[in-house]
Each structure stands twice: as C-alpha cells, then as structure tokens.
Length: 361
Image 1 (cartoon, rainbow, N blue to C red):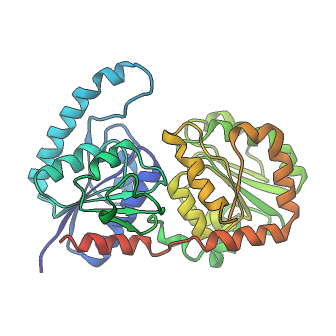
Image 2: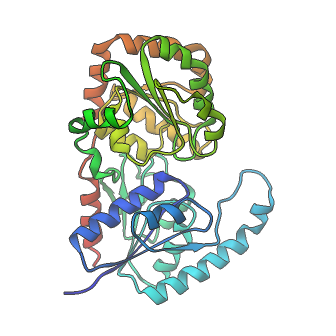
Image 3: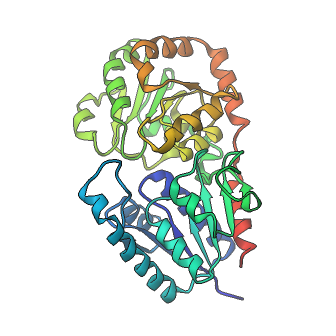
C-alpha cells in the first residue's frame, strides 16, 4: 500500500489551526500509515498547539503586513523571500503528495512553493470574505473548499467545493455530556449558564462589556464561564467566584458548550461553524478589526437565517442589556434561534474535505 505524505499549514489563530488539525486527524483515520508535517509561523500559537495534538511542525520566519508603516512591513519582502526558500527546502525534503492550507501567514509561501513544483494543493477557506493570500493562491490551487456560498467573485468557479468548515468531532453530541460538564465546572444545574467566547487571544471590547455587566448577570441568577483570552487573564482573574469562572483558554470546548444555555461570541469562521453544530442561542459581537470586516459578514449569514442575534461593538452601550434580558426571559425565542442555527450545520465537513484531498492522490 502506498504510504502517503501530507503537509498542512494553518496558523496565527485557533480559527486556522484547529481546522488543519481536524483535517489531519481525519486523514490519519483513513490512512493510518501516512506521514504528516505541519508548517507554521515562528512565534505563533500553532508552534505549541500542533505538537500538543501529536504532530510535528516546522516554523517559517513570516508575518503579515501591518496596516501602517512599521519595521515589520519593511522587513516583509525579506521574510517572504526567506520563507519561500525554506518552504521549497521543506517540500524537497519531505516530498508530500498533497499540501493543504487553512489560512494564516505561513500557508502563503508554502502553497506557492508547492504549486511551483507541481504538487497538488488544496485551500480550505473558512470565511465568507477571503483574505488576499488565498485569493492569490487560488489561481494555482487544485481545489478550494469553502464554507459559504457565492465565493465565485473571489475564486475560479470550477475549483470551488462547498464543504463547510472542519469542526472538532467531540462537539457532535454535546447534550449527553451536560451533567458531566456542569460538575466539571462546579456549576449549579438549576441556573442558566452564559458562555462568553472572545477567541483564543481574547477580545478587549467583549471583556470590558462583561466586566460592566457582571453584577447584572449574577443578580439575574445567571452563572458565567468567561473566556477572556491569554492577553487579558491577569486583568480579569480577580472576578473568579462560584458563579463566575474566568479562564484564559478552554481545552475542553465540548464541556463549555454542553454546560451553556446562552452564548456570547466573536464571529470568526470556525467559531460560527462550531456554534451551528452546538445549536445554542447566540449573540454575535463581531470584531471590527479584521480584514474586509469578514466577521460581520459571517454573523450576518446566520442572522439572515434567523439563527442568531448580531450586535456591533458600537451598539453595546445602548443595546446589550435590553437585548440580553429580553432573550433570557424569552424561552420561545431561545428555542427558535437554537433550531434555526442547527439547520445551517455541516457536521460532515471534514470528511467531505478529505474526500476532495483523496481525489488528488
């Protein structure tokens, strides 16, 4: 039997890393003898998260362009040239059958280098509005697996396959884990639980909102699991109490989803895909500081299907308390949001993507 080799690249945030790991895990299930190598950006979180998932990773000296003139931008051409050279060296040494990119700085030079020597490449685009790297790479890519419709204006139509985003398979049946999850977090099973997700690095504006609203939550008999992010943990850990669990990072996502009744979240593509599968009532607060405001577009796709509530950061002061309290009191509205968001779930996304990869072997 042929022993296949796969290189995967995705990083910078959990939203790029976890889809890459999910794809690798599915490939490993189907090809137990396959060899895997990840390529990431040095100093980014993938350098820790990928080895924790049991895979080898090599780092490139690469970073994104800043929106203003900085030393980092002046260094960019040099870093890009160095990363392309290193990518070619990695590909020559490892000899992959297919190279898969899930976004992030490192996937640009890696997929470019693979394409230039005729190795098949697959792009997995999580967002409703692709970044510049994937738009450029799409011209040479063999397949482009997307999570949203109407991306023909960015990518060659004949290469697009609508697959959905890969999600952790342990989220498929969270209802059965509810009592275990409530015990794990030391929560009261008779109270509503609010889960706050700011993304792997944290979200300053959401943290400020939760700090301001904390007393309101507690007075409304709502307990809170508050993921404030690594950057902000020192500022907010003082709020830890029996009703409020402040954490920097969540290892057991299945447990926090199982324990929660209501969710406040950013609208990164991977989070949105997970929340469709989880099927709990969600208030999205998109980050306005991302390319092309793609988080707002991700959230709007769910809101249009009546599957979530969307609040912009600029609306939080005036709207949040009213919207949250109304949702908390309205069990019918909670049920509707829950049912509608579930209809958008694509639980088999990872398998469908792997099927596309297999066609290139």
